[in-house]
Image 1 (spheres, rainbow, N blue to C red):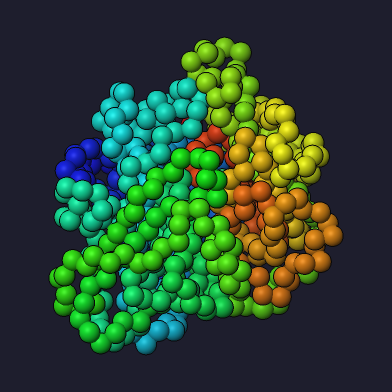
Image 2: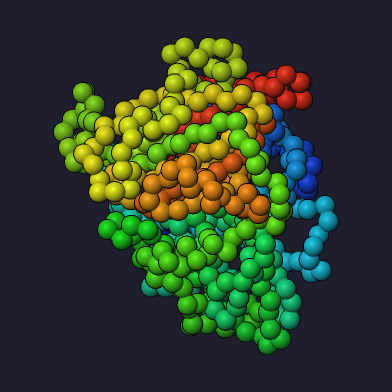
Length: 536
Ligand SMILES: [Cu+2]
């Protein structure tokens, strides 16, 4: 991990990279591979790396989120991640999980299946990022000459949401539609004529759900979050931050170039968004043309399209969902106004006279200054966390109705402990507090089945509508604005697992919890002993 000077749109900045590359290097492994990655921190602030979507079965030590499974790797220090990829294949990704460093520290993590279903496969990696928010904005203090954490301090000093981004990117490049300097900053991907190609899509953006499409081409979605789905065709895919997706395209017999494009989707029209469009060029055969026609993407607030898209997503594997459950949790997922801390200045509390915040079941998560997992493993949790994260919302109200008076979410470091082997059902209930937004919720250590979702408030009679036959299996799911999502998973992976919103602003103001899954009785159901972990 090191600083590197890069130029985009004729502006030069220093950013944090891995091996000097942006986006970072693609990691390719085979099913069942043991993966050993030595991370040396030559940047100026602590960092850790998360292998997004990798189960880390019994190896929670190497999952990566700072202050959850490890202390950050301090500048000048190294840490070796060491895990085996078991029972999964497809497109995942890796990214920094410390502060907002993932803005520039990310790359694809690809698990090749032991048997390849495609006669001729080409792999195309698309990254998407709105890191330009932090790249082009003239924040006082010129954060980019030091590190992103300084920028976070600037952006959140007033306790309000950060500015919107200036540009989106595809493979780290903004594309043709950003004025001067654009053409040289446009990604090109070359594929053969008359063939079927696999595109591996990752949404690495900090804050933005996206639409993505290719002019004149239909996308066949075959896999989401490294789990197969029943294949379906679409002109546009919807991909949230943290999600990955495999799609097939078939090229025609003519040589030619086509624009690929990505732009923001938002469920909350009242909030300003980055309304720019990132583009890249798909070259079919030996073509160096610069095409002009954009794919026909839905409008920024086209929630109807998103709902229709999500209705098409069904799991390829049938009958794998736990039909009985042992434990249910109902968790509100909410934006909030947090109290101004007693020692804070007025300038730092400019969001409805408090600070912009977020919570789950009214607890706005605060990181301890050490690793939750280490505290749990060594029995030294006192003063680090408490285990009283509520199983149900502490205050029952019309969650998605007219916003009630602020419920005064409180800051805290509370975890929820689950016995090994528990068949879990988790209802994530959105609220209209402050603003009804959709939240891409990501669970570490597991895939979950998305058995139901709807608008309004969840109640137990809606369980009869669940799809317990072929629901999709994801590691990240959108909780719809003003609605709910129902998940099921089997808690057979011991460890401390972060469960959080993948919009980094929401995450940084408290939208997360830690689920601790206890060891089982058998040695094969227990955490491996820890390596020497970084010190806080
Ligand atoms: Cu969120």
